[in-house]
Length: 187
Image (cartoon, rainbow, N blue to C red; front, side):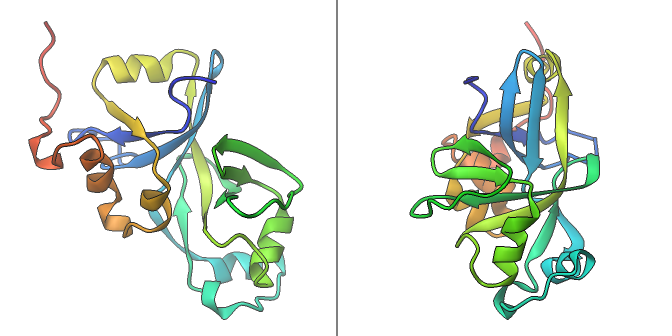
């Protein structure tokens, strides 16, 4: 396991890439070949009911119909990812990747069907697309002060209001986002 897995990448205040400005990205995989993450604070215009309609799934659980789908990153926006908590839930899905203690990403339709039927995970979020970095690219961006990395916290993922996730991720370092300066100098 990489030291960056199970971390949030928090964009520094002067990030000018619209895909990541004030973004919080859960780093799901990091190795010598590169990295993959899901941005968890960029709501799209789609709701879960839209996705169910596209997939031909009957929504039997009206409580999830208005659930926001997130823009997970600029790559392969047609690919869906369900990030879900597994604590107290030992079900297996057709295609899942463990991304932390009690946390998985599932990319198969079976989990969406279960959610539509009211039988899915209790805490989840859905993204379309992902963020990716080539070998060494993320490490270079961190050296250039593009990102802060902090331990991922499930309460930020699943409970924090979307517009507060960035400031809460920064605050988890022990200081307010107000003290962050745009790119500092280099000695």
